[in-house]
View 1: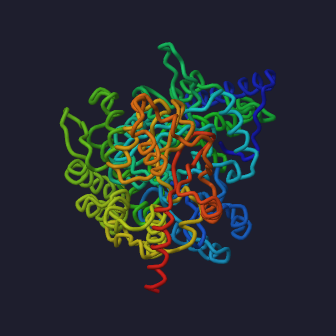
View 2: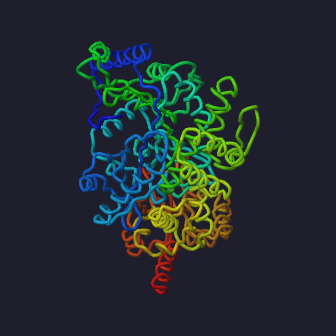
View 3: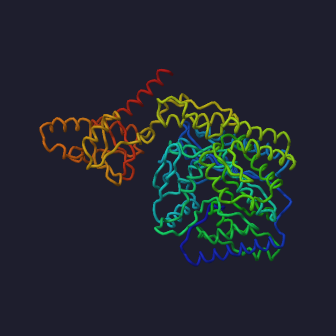
Length: 637
């Protein structure tokens, strides 16, 4: 969205003034395109590196503002969450050793961050979604205190008008209701910009859309969110949910989401994208420059098109069209927003090499994909690749189907290698970075694979929080060495076993896969649930998942003893024996407070409620497991 000082307003006159400026920007761009005032014959690449900040125990750390003061460098800027930061690299000429130069700049800047973070007791983590994030981390207290983010929160709530459901299904399923934009803070990306000639923009943009699926299949790095194993690149599904402004409707009206892959091929110029976005999406903010863009043009100067940039920053296409002006020269860029942060810097630059090489190679060999492959198939490729990564079947030119791995290894890497060498990239860089892609894909070892394999190979004993902290700790250690992810050792729970931060809140280890009944259920069902599943408490909820009672093993025994000679025993329901209004806690309750409550009131089970709805349970067995794990760690130490 550009400036951090934007404000939302409902003043109609201010909105009209902004729309006038926005339309004037579009007209100015149209004039510039018609009169050949956009730079051409230059190809540059740039990047934006987003990353997470964690504390010494690998939990999200709200250190962004304090860290920025220590860094004192304009290349770093805030993000939505106080546990996120962004690094903006200067553009590089797309030739020679630009790839290794990009890697060097990233390594130096991130080492600078690591040095300052050490003083604050924290670490840098490059990853698409931080494994140790919990739902408590998406609360308002973690939002960066800047007008831009507060304004975004307010306007999205106003437009949405209601809470919305997040439903992402992978190996596990995540279902939650949210009314906050802070879900976006769970994501971190590595955004790459490629400058293109204005007359070639439509063709290059269409190629960018085409190659998005195989590129993300080779680069997935965010398979886990809130301890759930979801898509290979869960960022995509999460971002589309977190910025959705559409209200639910009983009718069949089609309303486009602000986060999208697109709907069709581009036919002529970049104006098609900007005009379509202005036609489809209401303006969120209203900041107006003092002088119109066309007036700046008439004076012989290059306009910033600030209104267009602001609106463009609030429509989140995965391949975004960008206008820029620097040193009196205007240019056009395609921004690839699909790549995740991490796993390591060298992995990220390898992804850039593959993307740029394939873009150039397809332009040389195939030209514009429009008319050669159906856009709906390309969009289907994209969603499938985000879900399944290298295991995806992709439709390609000539209606051929390949596995993503087969397409990358047999078609795209050779194509990219030839194109990069033809474009005068350093041969050593081409061999190094595309070699990393070949090894990663051949071994089926993306960042997503590494995380899931680490979880799979960890012993069953140990909490979810420990395992996810171990993955984060291993990520930090491997990234410092800048090794490609396919050479990383799997994470081991011993890296963080017993660390108290893994047990601070009950949300880190509570049971969320619950056996429940309604008040009108048969008591025999409760007895069988306890017998079949080895549990001693069954929670009672209504149709809205509100907790209304609890049945203990002791209450069940008392019922059967008391009803031995009761002819009406078969007519009794759960409501007749359940304990109403049981004590409950929230996910954010500290383990100390939960344990104190259980001891003082002699409770063997504590239901966990979020906004009155049942979300989990903590039992004596959970506490005993934690104590056992901590004791074992002490004995091994």
